[in-house]
Length: 79
Image (tube, rainbow, N blue to C red; front, side, top):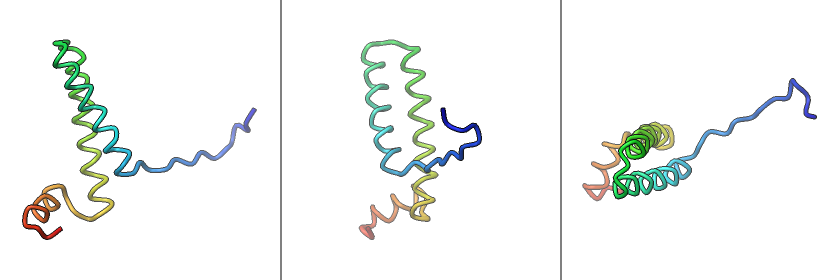
């Protein structure tokens, strides 16, 4: 049995982790819409929205750019 005072280390989620979860959430949302299950679709949409917000935060932490800044730079062929 581990000691009760063990230190737990929590690693922050990376952008790639969030992207993988976003792909899964999008699939779940599309499946729920296709199956016409309103409750599942609502839950999946909420998860998708939460993950999109988390992605925005992780992108800003990783790059210093907002999603809008990144999109603008990409559309202007700067990156």
